[in-house]
Length: 432
Image 1 (cartoon, one colour):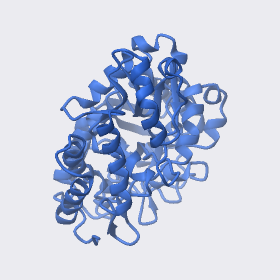
Image 2: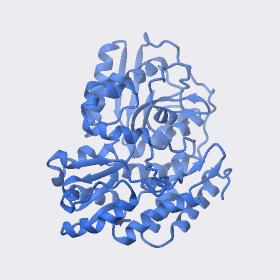
Image 3: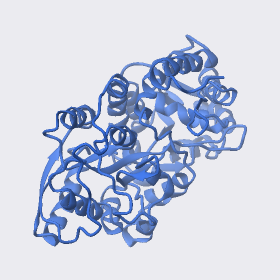
Image 4: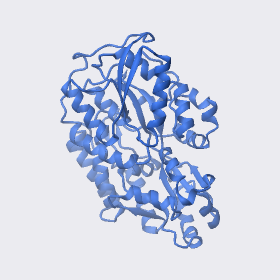
């Protein structure tokens, strides 16, 4: 993930909302190639669309590509960096047209099941080793019992805090939202000019830690039920609204809320935010974190249930089902998702591996950021990995800011989300 992921995520899910149900895909067997059981001797040219940040992340992935081509001289990689906000629609359009799609795509986790359901992704079931992958990231690459990708990187939001500000106020790192609310007046009193003890931005994705903390969720995919407006989810959202109304949290509902949150935290005007490992390098460039040790990382506070909940994000390597060099593409993603490759990326960028064995690699074990996020990741909550999953957040992006701004109640906001989902996203799911 990159430093502007949330901004791009909101643009991407807007595209998903418009396209996920309207797209007409080919059948899974229509012209699809099959991956061989053994791809070690594969040859050919592989075009890879890398959707990582071109400035901060892409150079490291290019280094991995060089390592791959050195060890696989019969395979040439055509590397293309595609802006994240454009990649989903661009890949869908090319796959629909039957021309121009890459052999390999770095797919956001919510895209994978969508593309798989349309027949755009190669079935990797039984063709690649999966036992070493963490179960939750791996689940994002699966649909209907089949495997359609390999997890590249994963993440889960944490409570990021300014150690110096908390120490100045004499408050401990909050482990519950109630503790955070109690600490807020002390922070405000001890730090003149503090804009926010906790700064909240209004992307719907970032409402999930509140919903999860009270036992809420988005959907029950097994029972095909909408849960976003359940009593538990409403209590979770009410927690966020109560923090805002008490002054413990500042909610920015402007179009630039994410960047405003990041600036306030980097400048030392916000004591705490909820965000993920993709922002650590950016945060450390801020004046409040000239001493990199000043950044604290802790689990998202728990609710009255004692549960701390973070949603799982990340990216998968996926292979286009009509790739002309499908074995070379499969060999490429095996290398790029290996424990050694993941450890290399983690050591360079601080991103979280998706393989258990990668966490045992020296450069990963020595990274304090990874060490802090690992236990958070292992307890994180999987999002609904259904083809419509990418379309869920458009309605949340509309209603969550209204609730934060006091224009509607928690119940009204989540009822509106549920109504939209029932109407346009998962019409066959039950409500109530």
